[in-house]
Picture 1 (cartoon, helix red, strand yellow):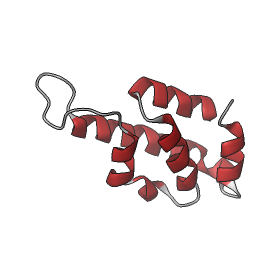
Picture 2 (cartoon, one colour):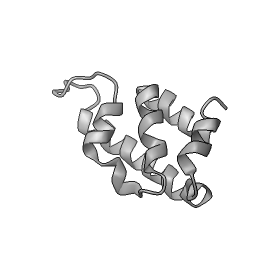
Picture 3 (cartoon, one colour):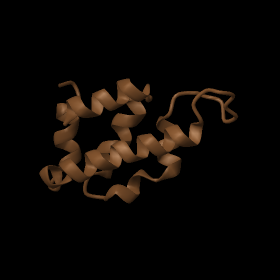
Length: 92
């Protein structure tokens, strides 16, 4: 699970510390916890007005979808004290 989250962080160039703060808290709270404002804080700096590059809204939507899929797949494994166990896996 930690490896997959690290792949998402690297692939999307997310802010690693912020992502590791937000995602474990979402376990047990449900995917709704990963709403727009929280996702926006994870994104790397990028223009809100794209010219031929990637649109910020598109990236935000894609990251939200990937993290939602991660939660759906792994949440049952971490229902009890999920964030503590996930934080132990962070360095894995």
